[in-house]
Amino acid sequence: DQQVKQNSPSLSVQEGRISILNCDYTNSMFDYFLWYKKYPAEGPTFLISISSIKDKNEDGRFTVFLNKSAKHLSLHIVPSQPGDSAVYFCAASVRSGGGADGLTFGKGTHLIIQP
Amino acid sequence: DAGVIQSPRHEVTEMGQEVTLRCKPISGHDYLFWYRQTMMRGLELLIYFNNNVPIDDSGMPEDRFSAKMPNASFSTLKIQPSEPRDSAVYFCASSLHRDRNSPLHFGNGTRLTVT
Image (cartoon, rainbow over all chains, first blue to last red; front, side, top):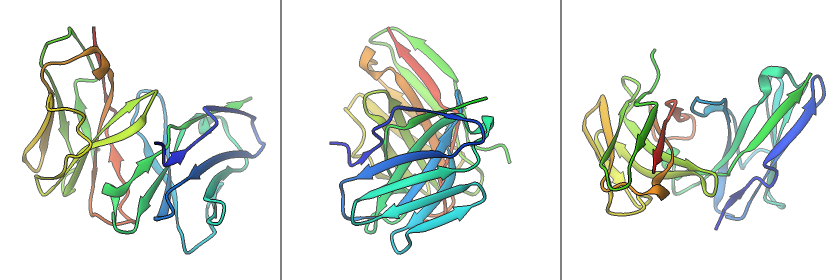
């Protein structure tokens, strides 16, 4: 049973436009959410996170939005650049799980930035 | 900082053989994690250690899987005997603290193919 779902296996966006990656979760105990980025033949790298006490967190071109009532979060990248082409993983943790040991990952979305 | 180092990068073996994957975490990190990535299940946590002690191995799929951390700078994940369904990318990750603000640092993974 996937508690963190990324329903779009892939997404193609034109360079310069906004990329929106979506993530849904089912466990209402999740209270901290993260996005990781992964290039081919490399491990995932941390990108941005958000706590459930917030509904938005911004870091440069990357913004994560959290809608707790809908159990939905999204990652916005604007403007999209060729180097953003990668697989993006959504992850979540429960309060009792504390830190990294409580991370549940989605299956990932492959973002392709078209020139 | 060299990051998390995994070896080998690729491993091809025959069913029934023993496989040993190796990991060197980032110096000073006191948490070490083993993850497995497959198309069907995405990124799954197999086991994690704190200060060289296994804390949670509930993600280890079967008794054929075992992991050790004999010291702070080295860990192994062993599969004996290996089966074709074990084919996946295995990631090792480390973190400084077990808290929300200490993201996981992943190695580049070992791609295991069992024929």
